[in-house]
Image (tube, rainbow over all chains, first blue to last red; front, side, top):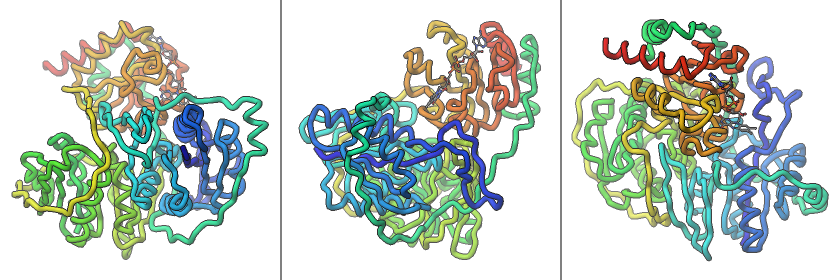
Length: 246
Length: 319
Ligand SMILES: Cc1cc2nc3c(=O)[nH]c(=O)nc-3n(C[C@H](O)[C@H](O)[C@H](O)COP(=O)(O)OP(=O)(O)OC[C@H]3O[C@@H](n4cnc5c(N)ncnc54)[C@H](O)[C@@H]3O)c2cc1C
């Protein structure tokens, strides 16, 4: 079993978001960076579980600069066997997908895992792009993944419900809540992570076709209007006449 | 031309399809071109998309599209886009659209922006378009510079506008593509609007004390024609089904009205709901962080407030 888990590094959920003076770039000063939660909790952990029962190798891959190595080592501490960093400073989802596809095309992975989306650009774009480059089936927002020989059974979140499907290896999947439970790396994991292989691969040329050029903060809320608990007719009136939502 | 892929899961158009066509028509107007819609599968009355501004509706009535497979769908959409020289392809940012958008961007050698919430502006051959990023904490404007462009539209970002007349759908065929996904079953909540499409959402948290108390939440939702949602601990404890869980780990929604009952308003919860147009918070703790994100607030015991709110809504609806 050869499994690839693509991990992204994102600002921590609780971090305050700000941008440089002209709004062209995210201001990373003082921001704590983490492994994108869905990549870590669901994709990586499920890949490690499959490897633990079926044998094989879990490769964690990040497209990013050397500064991301702390995050990559965390993936190794959680259980990936080896890691690859494609050296670059990506500016678009298209760039990231191209790099992953170029790396994966000759590696014959059985499953390529993504998280359902990143918590910075909330795009959910890269997995489908990689699936297309590699001409593989793609299952997005999977909340369950079981393997029986070379056939996988998955459950996938759809609007207001769930779809159950089967697909043969190899395929690409994006992982959502339910696929696995978060694992906290233990001391042994952290120690062995230091000596696990982390390979650096050069990026291939790619011209961005869509990228963020301007960031702004949403307009501040006017502030809450409090309504007394025994004045529900008044709340309804406000929702109808002022907010015009009912 | 602007081509809109109008989703019709299990033969039914959803509101998101009408939103996408309305959006596509507006993009086409701004670019001085026309808007066409593509329907895959056997949905009846595909011609109604004309009312939302599609001058042409293409329909592939092949049973191969009865079940969703991103490979067969992307192949068909790309073929129709190519044959008709589509410059902009519009999708819904739904479970289906998210599986397709990246595929189509690669296939059409197009730049992609997913989950947009406003109309693009044209600048030469480029389009600029905005979306919410950092889980609602910021807005980013993206520039798409490729010749062909793919945009997926966030639910509830534009209002469907039915202005014109229906057209008659033109049945077309596309080359066969191999599907490799075998859909075994689809389970959806019948009779309610799925959360991502709901205009009004009534959501409740741990303040409810236990699943046995949800009757009043459901009654309020029924009175308002709303869909119910919940916070993460509530879903984790199986008080409510998993698909109701909103927030960072659940789903992100942007209804017109979000009523939060007994939810503290942790940042991970807000990440999924802070794009709601109007937020009402009912919480007994005046210091609950949710009040900072709210438009209207009621500081009080939910067990008293919710039934009273329900009575007031019923009176309003009746009157
Ligand atoms: C990485 C991460 C991801 C997360 N993702 C999500 C997510 O996707 N969605 C999510 O919701 N949470 C998420 N959480 C959890 C989040 O941090 C909060 O713990 C959670 O949202 C709290 O749920 P709650 O508001 O229902 O419960 P509580 O925080 O326990 O709040 C209950 C509220 O009810 C009020 N209350 C109690 N009794 C009454 C009463 N009788 N009348 C009126 N008010 C009352 C209380 O004052 C309190 O404010 C995540 C956390 C982490 C660390």
